[in-house]
Image (cartoon, rainbow, N blue to C red; front, side):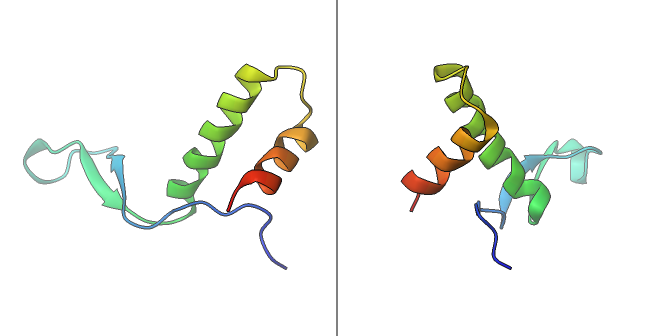
Length: 67
């Protein structure tokens, strides 16, 4: 199987739950937890512009316009 939607998830600057070295609150991390906010942000913007769109319509908009 292939994913329908892919997002960047490597070396993303993210807030740290526990301050690491000398109280730094951010660090670079990788994985699906880093990719998910990219897609969620796109959905939030589309939903604010088109509040009546269904989840299927939102997914279709992303899949047919992304490259």
